[in-house]
Length: 456
Ligand SMILES: [Zn+2]
Image (cartoon, rainbow, N blue to C red; front, side, top):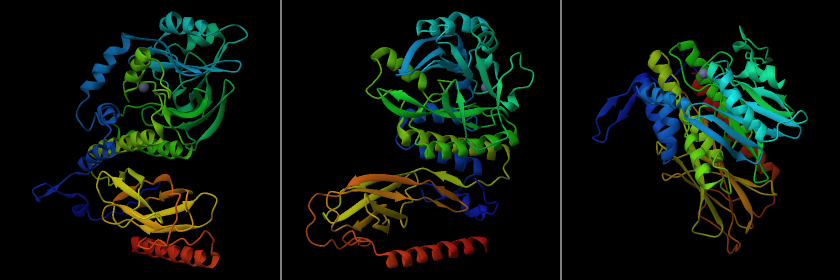
């Protein structure tokens, strides 16, 4: 994502009002740290885990990371988390064993040879490892020893292959297949016959790689994200890379409708608690590893703001727009011929945003601005009992990146008299190309004018 170097005067951007109404200057770092908290919403699990760890440096709370490291000797028993995926490892760093049609794919390779020989090899055997069902390939998230320490043993003794980001591949005792760390676009790679959409995410290390893959959850396809490298360094260029990597991960996760996370450092986002829950109660109807798309994207928006807080702490001259996580929910309209959706964010800055309503199996649509409560309303006569989508397309200026949000609903079955009172009327389902064309031209004109002003 390109960031505009120009910004509103810092005096405006850095001002906030306290409850007493007194103006209080916030540093850029404080603004982003505060934004991470606002992006958490009401999700206490996200606050206590992902936010606490992603923000540990700007929060001056490295103690939680040190405490987590001490759990590297506490084992996580082999546990099934999806139809085709098992987790094994320690409470500090875990590996994922994935079953494919003709063999295993592994994510990360443990701390060392003794560990994988003692735990991972028997785990694979118990799941059916054989000459005709071998460990085919290992996806290494990065080149640190707690992720690839057992790779040499697995490659030499189980005749497997491994994949590693090219920038981490120097001076390795094993010869990995390389993922190009300089290509920052998502790439489809077949790893052990399974399709991984890999994304170079440098920052934690130069060769850190993330990936999205499809797994089966009670027979249903679910896309999950594997985070490659999560803690930040104190080097400004590396943290800037890390921030960019999180922004690209967000874009990928949104585009691919990612709903779950398989993170190697399972304490980082609270996954270790999910494993405990599976061990205690069994897998839920939906695996505990599924956060839902909103959960995954919210977590990445929090991580982005924690990263921005750290980067602007290290380099106070940087100005970064704040990412604001938005949600949209369909709300009951007072009139059967009206449809409404309510926009929310942690800033309660929700008035005057454009929400677009579209109907399933129809080219008709309507765009309406939110009121002071964040509610946008459209009249919908003739659309009784129809599925519709409400969408806030997002908005970017020099101070804020308002992330897009969408919601689905169904109009009431009964459509009586004409609506009235809505932000606009859609008509009876017929699409008027001339009116639509004029509307698009008008919108385009507004966008162009806004861009023109921004450049001025
Ligand atoms: Zn590492």
